[in-house]
Image 1: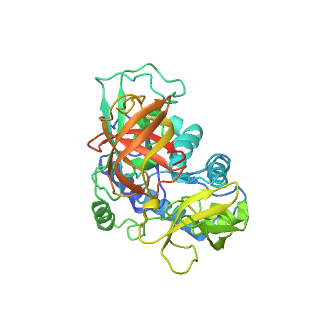
Image 2: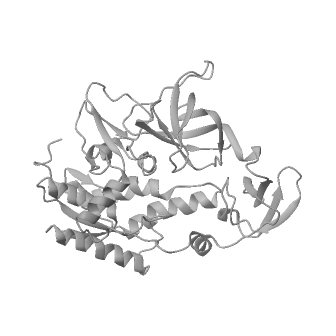
Image 3: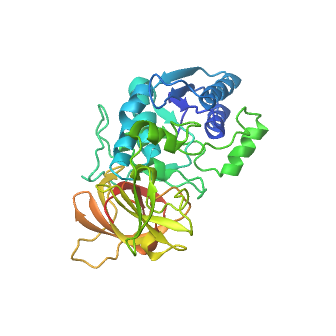
Length: 385
């Protein structure tokens, strides 16, 4: 792609990855504009120290290369869309992924509405790649894929994996729309993390030695359970051993626990695993032992499948023998899971994994890839087990 005639916006987070993105673009003779997206749990919330440091780092890097930096306030949009989504899902007993929705609704959504629409490309530090396939026309898939004032086009863009299996972030991008992917630019997506670190150190970039951010993007240093307690409160309930029905403890609210959880249960004689939740009765069911069979699931449904570019993954009807191979992820790990899909309705599939999977939780996104784990079709929400 020839970038010389493109207007490029770089989203600087204050971390090492986005800083190297700016370096890579400047190295190619480009002079992009830089933006720092200000988000948080509420519009009135004070910035914590980590947020202030993020902005300082972003400012230092942009000034190093003589690029303009603008702060774009997306506090209200983040609260109205992403945190509300998170709290609603958690209250319903599900396991949401707010970082997935942040990419779709904020980085390539609210930012686009405020400033990104003035640019041809939006560059981020995601570990992902992109391919264009001009030979295939977008099919009438189950994707809400309408770009504002989108022109008719035969170009199909694919979200593709990074060569770094540990850092690959296609799972976090699997809910974006096709027009958002078309505008996305991933300058370090083809690199390994160690290579990015080496560039940052060699070029003396301010965030070179900063640790990668952990946890949910809007919380900063706020403890996630404390955040849930602030907005959802506490509700004491029973912890029940699944196999015996015996009450072995109590919890302060089902929203503090997720399927597959092992740590933080406060139960003696462990290990214990959360294997089921009764939301109506506010009961947490646990199973005892090391990786008990009750903590695994091999066949599970997904709904509301979101196709990034309109192309749907290979699947059979319920009456056919499963033979169409895909790969998938249900959480952000390097683990690649082979499976087949059975189409059960519009946007609905039954996943048949090649082997039992630990900690399958309703509300998680199941991200579907091709058999080579290269091209990402999109993702759907796991429903009841």
